[in-house]
Length: 435
Image 1 (cartoon, one colour):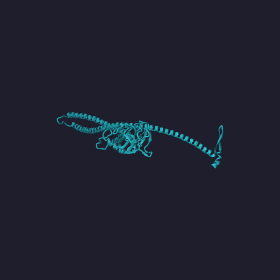
Image 2 (cartoon, rainbow, N blue to C red):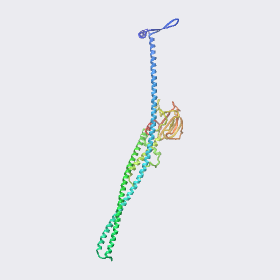
Image 3 (tube, rainbow, N blue to C red):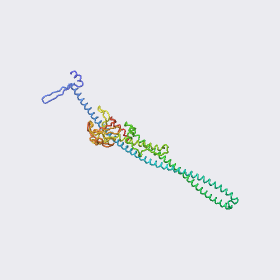
Image 4 (cartoon, one colour):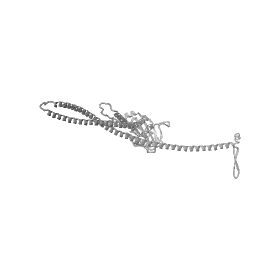
């Protein structure tokens, strides 16, 4: 120890502290090793104070940034939800207006086709009338020629002798009367011919006008059909994309919905016109295709009501836990945190098959939907439905709580397909660009 003190003496020379009182004086000897220990201890305490202060400051700053970021993300998400809701209402209104315009267009097409058929019948009748008039005119001209031949024969007889007990003067008078009669008949025939010719020309002009009107109708129908086809494409493609993103087969969904809604008739029934044994024309085929797309769109709408594409919480909330592994165990749903008593809504049409206490789930509501889909709503503070009750999408079924195994007020939301849990956000994200 003396050797160590000798080495440390260069930097920490031995010091003495004197303690003086009224009666005596004492001193404390501070060896170099003692001074080194004191210096090291003081330095360590000072460094620890600096580091602890820095850690606390960084933690406070980091916590503030995280809270601000969470608040900004929540505001952004709520704004996005409001925008999606507005877009959904606009798309629904556009689809309804397109359907109304299509109904009006169908009525106009029906009226135009009726007028076109009537004009075709009128033109056929006029053609038959023209044929009859031309035949009559030919007969009249033949009679005129025969009358002229008769007049020539009478003129030759006027220069002959008395025949049949009549004098030449009598035969002249008869010939003059015959000529006057034939002249009057020819004038009447010519007037009728002119009238018939005028009628025939009017009929040709009318037929030309009908053909022009038919071309205008055809062009307008083409514009209407094009607009309707574009509207159908815009309306159906997002729904196809939504179902595919959720892992649902569009064909299978349509088949199942059509099996449950198999009534016939109404405005979506395909058009059927008499074609006299011929194939339907292009306009009829296009109209039937549009009607089939409208029927498909309606089936999609029904299917969307029966699949859980909606959010179970409409008030302000935040996601506290997602689908997947958590704490070494599988978390089979998504957690939504909000204030106690926040309304909980059904995410699709279905039937409640369980509403009671579930082990670990607390107050639990289970709803069976179409296509083998089931949704679960756990940790509720109260339940507003009973087993066997039929519910619609958007209907309130309970209120948020913290029953069962729960660390705080929240909703545990599950989606199961064929009894197997799937990520609920798959359905919610698939519908974000549609509804």
